[in-house]
Length: 366
Image (cartoon, rainbow, N blue to C red; front, top):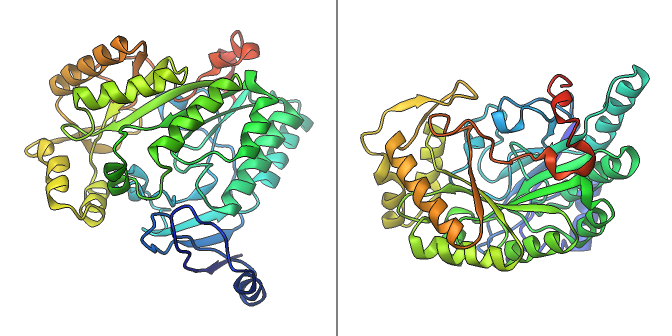
């Protein structure tokens, strides 16, 4: 069962609904929601539905192969123009997101089932390979909080995440109670607010993400920067990267993972629809002219990547800048198997003190 409502809210990051309209929506449809995330009155349709399949699932990505993963939604309201989920069969379309409103309940059922069968529980769960636990939708945040609190507080299971959203205060309070079993990555590739607004219109502003990095470090959570995807000739200038890396280093960050943008037909289509600045769009797409598609090692899918020698030289340059700023850089092996066999700490079991000796045992669980 599912239901949908669309409402317009003015102003960026304004999530307040008029109470009369809210009550009427509840009476008529049994549900709600729509948000204006970018200050331009953009309508985002939110559909709430019950999850029919398992919540905790394995991932084909090398960097996530040892952890169960969970998606809170299908689709994402951050609207990142380059996002690979736009090519997924369950993608609800631009300007839409489907929220699984029974996720916490489903996770509890799955964990209790394992306990009853005397099966080992996971050491940690990764949020979210194809969505974001911190997108600014109340129903998403509520389910994310309940699910994380269940894992951390009731079962002692670690939480790992990557986000481009703004992390609400209640999550910091929760993580502060369990810092040794929480690890997070915050995605940020540029400090330029206008550029971020063009390519990531619904994501948190750069300053907000920097503040969240600092707060996570302050409460003892293992935290790193995810500079992915870098866009060749757009977000990877020496001065721009030095400024970004300097800012995160000031906030106590010592690790960064990086990779470059790749294209699939759905991503190219999204860029063409979403990027209204013709010059910027050309800057993004021009480096891919004449480049053949190739297989993504970890998923078997095809994509258009910058040639190996280009990625190698550019990532070497990014690494030198990171080192100059006191950061250790990891390359995402999922998208750069020709360059590295390492993992990019998308998930990081070594971040938790009680998992260091047990991590290999997780591989067969899910």
